[in-house]
Length: 172
Image (cartoon, rainbow, N blue to C red; front, side):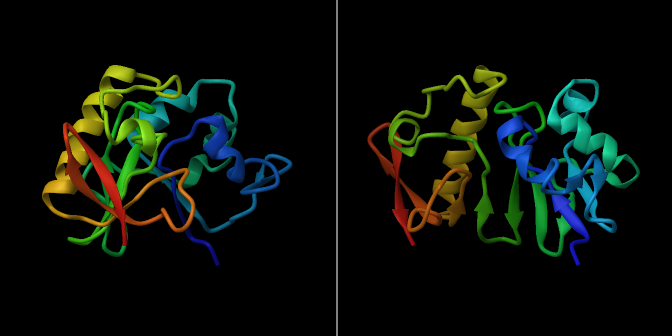
């Protein structure tokens, strides 16, 4: 039984698995006991829009739980606020170890060597850039294992190493 869903972000491409055919069937929630957890800024951003994310938020309205930076969403998993890609984009810190960073970067080949590079996919490119720089610095300094959105095996889990003015991912 699925009793919790943590949304890193809710743009159309990522929310698809929760719309009709996913967590909704003809607009009705499929996961009857699931609590949907998302950042308050993400909730506010999509609430009044005509978008798939708004339909999921409306359908699960009585089970929406907002979770801010540092709040737990599952055993050992806490929210890591990583705004910019979307207003309430989050990652997850798993205990003192690995982190999941969602979409703080879209192209490792472009954005790890030069973390200043922004993409058209970010709602606020300046905030996304600042967030990316801080998050990557933290991951590298603490030698954390990280995973991100849009990665495929064997690139799903890596550590960051400084490389010139940027970083390179070393698979684990």
